[in-house]
Length: 173
Image (cartoon, rainbow, N blue to C red):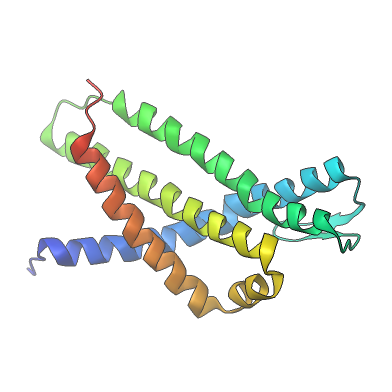
């Protein structure tokens, strides 16, 4: 049996979180992101031609509205993810398992879910920034899977460390 050190476990967990964050983003966050663009188009009077799982096509505008529409997708998704994060903090706090194994499981799933949500928030904020200010850079990022994965992996490592640090300094009792 191979025993892993603490640093090895952190690296493996960061990889696990990055893969789960990508799956979560593609399956749930992407449609929410597109609805953010949709609502901005409605608010700004821009015609939406079609909306799909991870793409929206709207009538081209070449003024300030393009920037607002670009920012809105990621910001709407971040608001959604923030609500999920708060619910996860409150929800996991109410679980009081009686066994050591139960405590470890709750702590692990809490760490995993919070880290995934935080990593996805960072990805969405980065995407919103580029989509609203430098659309060509945003399109290059989205089309380059390797760069997108490395970015997600970096955000996953940062979110994992942040959640661990917050867990040590926060007491809700």
